[in-house]
Length: 152
Image 1 (spheres, rainbow, N blue to C red):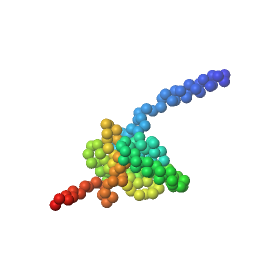
Image 2 (cartoon, rainbow, N blue to C red):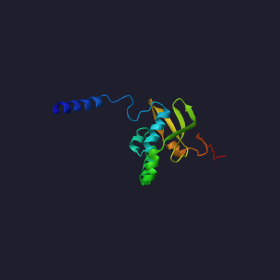
Image 3 (tube, one colour):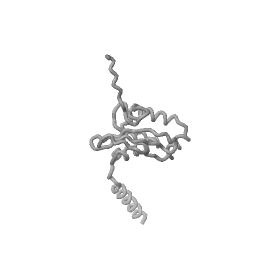
Image 4 (tube, rainbow, N blue to C red):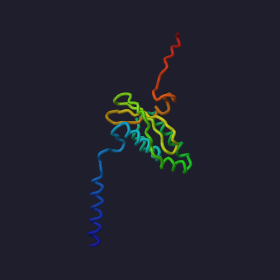
C-alpha cells in the first residue's frame, strides 16, 4: 500500500512538472508594458540575472545593470525589503516613439521617484534598453541632440 502511495505521488509530480505553462519562456514579454514591468519587478526583487533576460544585451546595459546590482547588494536589509514589498506604478503618458519603441515612465511605491525606461522590440521580443535611463536628458522624456557646429 505504501509503495502505491509513493508511486502515485511521484506520478503526480512528474505530471505537474510536464504540464507547467510553457506559454511564455523566461525573458519573453508580450508588449512594452510587460517587458518594463518584468524588468522592474526582477530588479526590485534583487533578481538581476532575471532582470538581464528582459534587457537588451549590450556592454553598456550590462555595465549599468552590474552597477545597480552592486548598489542593491550594499543597501541595508530594510531598504531591500522595501523594494521587494513595493508595487510598480506606470505613469502616463507613455511615449510610443514608433511601433517598436516606447518610453515608459515608472516609479515604485517605496521610493516614488519617477524615472524612464526605453523598451524596444528586437526580433519580435520586447527588451528594456537600460542605458536610456542614465543617458537621456533629465528634463524631458525625449532624448534631444544639440547640433553644435564648431566650425561656425
